Amino acid sequence: MTNKICVYAICKNEIQFVDKWLDNMAEADYIVVLDTGSTDGTFEKLKADKRVYKVEQKEIKPWRFDVARNESMKLVPEDANILLCTDFDELMSPEKGWAKLIKDNWREDTTRGYYMYAWSHTSTGAPSDVFVYNKLHTKDYKWIYPVHEVIVPDEDKIKEEHIIDFGTSLYLHHWQDLSKPRKYYFDLLKLSVQENPTNCHVRLLFAREYLLNKQYDEALQEYLGVLNMKEIDNPENRLILLEALGRAADIYVIKKNFDEGIWYCQEFIKEDPTYREPYLLLAEMYSQMKMFTLAEAMITTMLKYTTRKYNWVERKYSWFALHNDLLSTIYYNLGQLDLAIANCQEALKQDPNNVELLQRLNAFLNVKINNLSKKGADQPEKK
Image (cartoon, rainbow, N blue to C red):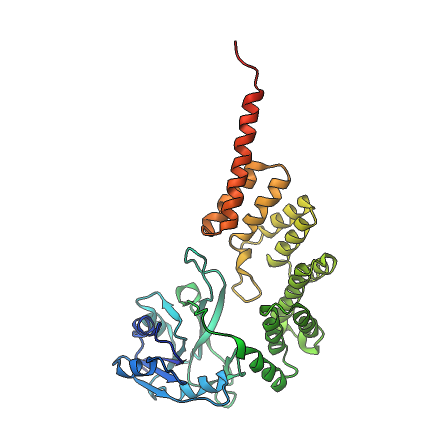
């Protein structure tokens, strides 16, 4: 069997992304798009481009992401056996050869492929929030959930999945369009909870939306509700348990309720001591409590764990500038100025446009200069 790839997507008013996206996706044998109501010329541009095998326009009312994704899959031609779902603000890497990599490794019994997904990037362009992604599959799958939709096997067609893991050799990079509002996410998540009342994954996403909206009391109530659900102790929900513990701790840190924050971090560590996140949170709390030696010890412990898990429980700052940022303040308060400066400089390498870090480094350097000047003035004059 000859492997053929079809990229399928939904879009609405993506004119700013069309050219780059098509250039990147053109390695596929087919590109199909369901336009859900563009008014900015996106639909017309796609229709005129010969690289697009099929584009149709259809409004989905009431709007649901899962319905739109499933409708877009209907545009895939019969002879395509490998389907890749992307959005217009996402680009595949390597920029040349990604399709060949997939085809050369896809076996006759393969049903799904795993690859890396860089959801966000640092100011230098390096991937920061990175997850394992799975939107590479055969036709025997379907989308579920009104928002934060996921693709699952069609139980009538697949009894057992056969997965190929491309690891870091295949990346999808997300260059987020921050201009698009999230206001309709909340109602869709509420609907998702109503449709799936015993699903702790859906409830977790609902809690996260409150957190993103800075509605901390409501978010905390939802995260604690997740932790009290019966299914939370099932092994397949382990990541959900860890995420809920970590986010509850986050909120207690924001609320400066450090006793509760410490307790939830400790519970996280009891469940799995190999994540960096609870140690970094503990360091933040101890630093705010002016217990700087304990804060340093937490970061020292955190740095022992050097293997990333690439799941959504991890936070980008556990692997980038935040611990150096925090250490710079810790060491300054411990009277170790050179280490404070070194950590501030290291943090700036990863986040060079951080104004607060630049100001802090200048302040530390001025202290050092003043100390050296004072020391020089205190030296007895040689005769």
